[in-house]
Image (tube, rainbow, N blue to C red; front, side, top):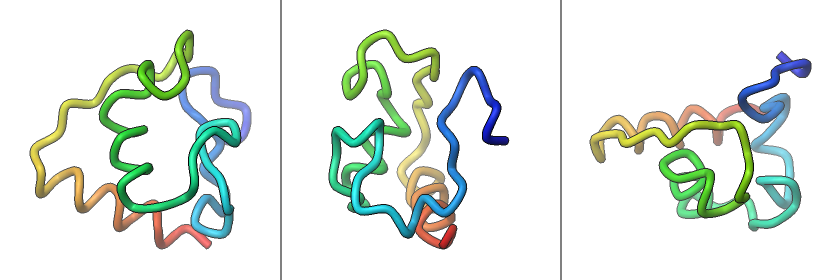
Length: 68
């Protein structure tokens, strides 16, 4: 939902060159870091930390990379 108040707009996220309010290159590693600890990437963000198991994190990143 582009009107979300807790997380970012993920519309076409895989088509973007940068993520996290243009602070990171759109790579698998950057996506993983952003999902797990968004406060480290963008202090003050309302997005909460997401401590995921490695396999779950890999699945989330793969899904995000499919959103063209």
